[in-house]
Length: 170
Ligand SMILES: CC(C)(COP(=O)(O)OP(=O)(O)OC[C@H]1O[C@@H](n2cnc3c(N)ncnc32)[C@H](O)[C@@H]1OP(=O)(O)O)[C@@H](O)C(=O)NCCC(=O)NCCS
Image 1 (cartoon, helix red, strand yellow):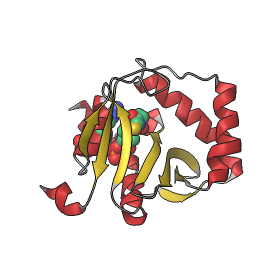
Image 2: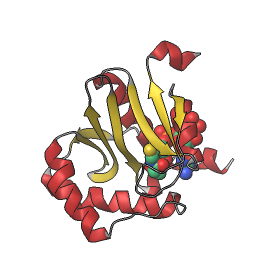
Image 3: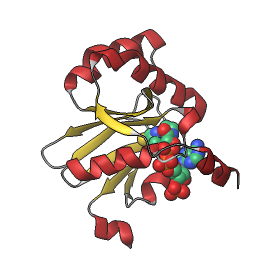
């Protein structure tokens, strides 16, 4: 019920996507920091805010695979991806806490579906039930559960894979 009300109050139809540029670095870093503290208290960031800002500016944006969503010129979402020899990866997906549940993540994911070769894979924490529901309802299937030993936070995660739209409609 609360979420239906949130949907009604959202303005998503004006959301536009574009590739990130260096001037977006600070806002992107802040979203990555804010979503972690707002939604993933079980997996605190292993890096300081200054380190996250520096990584976004010096590594993430120069890699050229960062797409941002804007509403009225305000950065409200970010997604980064990578192409590997046998699959694509969504490495980062984050919507500003004040805009979660408004359709921004779906717009970003639709962009990934348009441009990324299949299969598309991503990791999320097992405890991230909101994100898991989001991905599963859009056709991702869990293909591996880990004990978290291999990630920085040592927090159990789940590997998801998306193959095609037919799979999504089953
Ligand atoms: C997961 C996330 C990217 C989805 O983006 P979004 O813009 O909120 O998603 P949309 O509005 O397009 O769709 C809402 C869906 O997200 C799910 N969701 C996840 N967290 C939610 C939350 N806190 N509030 C409302 N919906 C949430 C809902 O189940 C809903 O699914 P449904 O439409 O199938 O019922 C976004 O909630 C987010 O950034 N969360 C925090 C960071 C995160 O978990 N990132 C993913 C790590 S891999």
